[in-house]
Length: 481
Ligand code: BGP
Image (cartoon, rainbow, N blue to C red; front, side, top):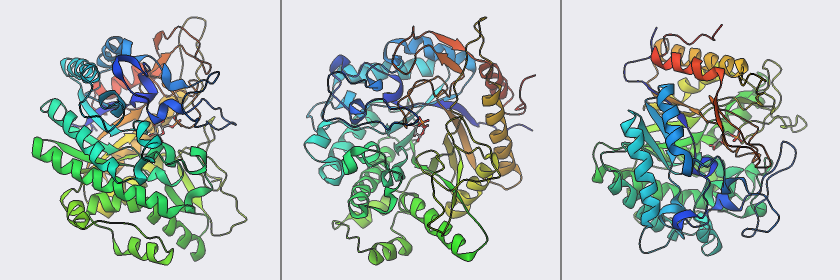
């Protein structure tokens, strides 16, 4: 059986993970540009500006800035009908608070968007994918400062007007709920030196939720503006959805799971419903979290509810009420207790296709709005064989099993799913580790963790597989022989 007519098939990327050219044509420094490379065992470091002798993978990334023609031609050959990309805010407003936009930055996106449209590929644009102009951190302190709202909305107005009639689908903040453990990437907050801290989910809550409140207001204003500029615009939120299971059927574990799910869902609750649900306000009260809200905020939230729910799904996690059961099993952003029923990837993320079906059902039940899978994929180390081929059957296996569960959610459970953009159709820089060799692509990029390599692009076996999936509108998702 095919996927519904008009289903969106694509791939997802972020400006700072592909573009490089980090100071070219008037671009300002972004928060992503001051994060060094790490590894599987060593965390990335947020430095005070650019320090000599340190390696920052975003500075060159895969050089999409200069190679977009070749890359879009490959996407066209792949057959995708959409491409999730982000605009680097600091290319348009180098400091965030500038009076005028940077015309050269806009011209770059003009070229990319026009070329995508010529190739029959609909651009889906994230407005802030784990980056903001660095000056807004050094001078304002990131999203904790309410002035960021005005800067963001001005930037949105510039790009909504410029790409009117060309871009019709937008997402506001990538994985907005990741602020809980990754406050620098998500909101420019220098808590804990900007490091990702998996233990910190319940710490510094007032600061994180205050910054999130400013983002909620900014997102709601952006939604309203997008609809005003072009009623055809559809704007979504984007959340990381760490599907969570209770460790046992002990009600204490089930309660712990419920609290965790609610905590991650708070963000989409506000963005989709347009108000803070009572549960959230009760949580703030119980934990003495005081959020500064201004008169008018309630109205803004109400008027700026999103049109669809974009989310990332890579793996599931397990929650235990027993503090001696350590949550040290890694996953996308979030850690959990080890699940003995699931295999793990080379980077330790547990692979759970059925969890995607459960997630689609949970989100649709909770909100009754269309869903969009904005990210999903397998990070793996690929090997280029002497004949130049890359046999990534493990990736095909991962993706085809997830597509099978999507089909079940659509046809057996009645979920309204708009589309699917697998993460990194072309290899790119990893967010968690800064590595290049954690690869997601259908297209290989010859570049290693130290930034060495020719940047040559090579099609992997999964390229042919995804090409067939799209050509048959998902009727044929089985792995290739
Ligand atoms: C998500 C981010 C992406 C992407 C992905 C894979 O959290 O939105 O930007 O990088 O995770 O994670 P990683 O790059 O760490 O493998």
